[in-house]
Amino acid sequence: MSKGNPGYGNDGSGGSSGPATTWSGHYTVDPSEMESRFANEDGLSYVDSIFEEPTEADLEKIQLVREILPLLPPREADFVELYYFKKLRQTDIADIFGVSQPTVCYRLSRAASRIRFLLGLPRVEVEVMEADLTGLLTDNLDVQIMLLMWKTTCQSEVAKRLGVSQGLVRHRFLRTVNRMKGNTCYLSYVQLFEYISSKLNILREVQRPLWDERVTHCIC
Image (tube, rainbow, N blue to C red; front, side):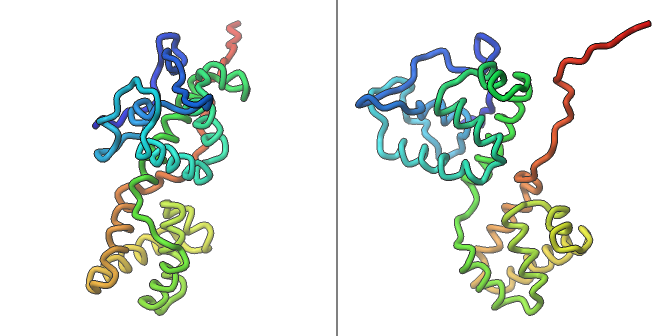
């Protein structure tokens, strides 16, 4: 399956030209369009683009995305809600928030990447993970580093929160993962943290330079 990012529609806005999917008077997102945005290899390739009522599996996948939205930066979550679920065009979203259409497109693309990452992230209960880490690690700093790396995926952010160097965070993180590999009880956590290692900084919020905003140059 493809891993599409939000693109441009025929009007340059990235909006869908087809009618919204409805059933029983309710308004929903077309799962085939959801797939093109947030697809992975286990996605909805079998779903036709035109149907009258989504399947239970379709609704479950849509619900998963909705549950993930609070984990995104608030502005990105708003854009996803309006674009994918409310079917607004990128240009309309830009007008609502007072930004340019390229900014909306960029934030939707970033949100799609974060959602794909979160959909693929092995599920764990944070309380259980903290207890398991405490049982393995004698230094509470190591426990906090692993928990924050799971939460933020960003070594520099973890270092900032704990008041230590980024190099120390990296060293302790890798050391803990290697230690887990020697204990079969922690192999699920090895999978979790290696997945995070492959997508470092994916959840980091970065302020984008305003290169897309209009600039007036005065030439004398």
